Amino acid sequence: MGEIKRILVTGGAGFLGSHLCERLVEQGQDVICLDNFFTSQKSNVDHLLDCHNFELIRHDVTLPIWLEVDEIYNLACPAAPGHYQYNPIKTMKTSVVGAINVLGLAKRCRAKVLQASTSEIYGDPEVHPQPESYRGSVNTLGPRACYDEGKRASETLFMDYRRQNKVNTRIVRIFNTYGPRMHPFDGRVISNFIRQALHGEDITIFGDGSQTRSFCFRDDLVEGIMRLMAAPDDAGEPVNIGNPGEFTIRQLAELTIELTGSSSKLIQRELPEDDPKQRQPDITLAKSLLGWEPTVPLREGLAKTIEWFRSIDMSHYRPPTPNY
Ligand code: NAD
Ligand code: UDP
Image (cartoon, rainbow, N blue to C red; front, side, top):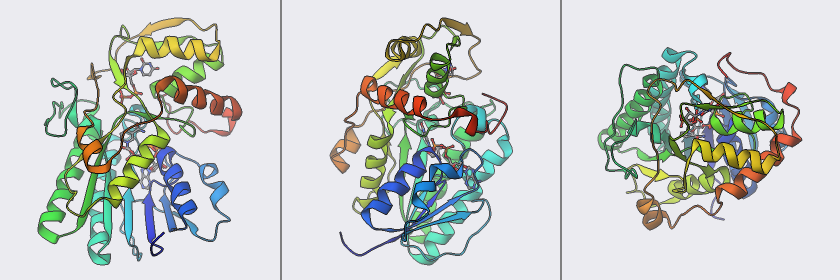
């Protein structure tokens, strides 16, 4: 390893952030994890607290912070629809004001800064699969807009700080990612289905279940974003990271039942407003720029995630919002 870097991970106690912190601590980096614990809990990083190269700060990214760092991964933002729609104004502030604060910090420290953007910026896409050049189809007025438009604005800010202030920026567009340490009550499809299957509850398919998603295992995703941070400094354009393996929600429900051995039944619930009908990443750019591609197929990643869900005591997890 080269010189030890001081690395800030905002949202570092979350599902993806905690795994990223773990990887960086293992590398021997000097890691600062910043989180307000809105959708996470300290237990996600408990095992890191005694490491000499790990530090935990309770802070809200909508407020400025003065630190000295070399790299910033900006992951702070609720990611599950039920979480980001709980307080949509705060969600927008977290994306926009949060981006301004981390970009200001990066500018002062001359740090590299990576924004966790999302496939949601493509909205309900008319182009399939979605390459980075596709500009998206987002309803600016609907219940998902606080998240989609917040992330779109954060991308704009990252590009403008790059052009105007020469900040060394990166943008990753993350497609649906799952794995151990997902919040069991976040309301996302994988956590809902596994929880329901393990408890013998009905599996709730929204709509007819023909809508698709492409699911990436957590470890593949984190590897991809670390490679993007390490990529040449001209890698400022957004990069899709996700697993192109595309499944209908009904297929996911059936696979979850098979892997858990559950006797749960599939039931239909109303499809939420603006729910995208299809989603699949075009990862040509990630392959050529980063030499990255996913290695964990859904069946294998889902089995690992189910194993983790079986190992936890769900009563220790506080549903962050009533919307699960
Ligand atoms: P998560 O909810 O587990 O993690 C987000 C973390 O940010 C949590 O620890 C939360 O407490 C923290 N946070 C929220 N608002 C904050 C604020 N104002 N100040 C400080 N901390 C705050 O979700 P995740 O899946 O780990 O997502 C991490 C990032 O990746 C998010 O930015 C999300 O938008 C993005 N992303 C995730 C996915 C996915 O499928 N997991 C897909 C696309 C994008
Ligand atoms: N979904 C579902 N049942 C659930 C939760 C979600 O059928 O209990 C569907 C949801 O309508 C969407 C897909 O699963 O079509 C993925 O939802 P999620 O909230 O995980 O993420 P999204 O990609 O929509 O942000």
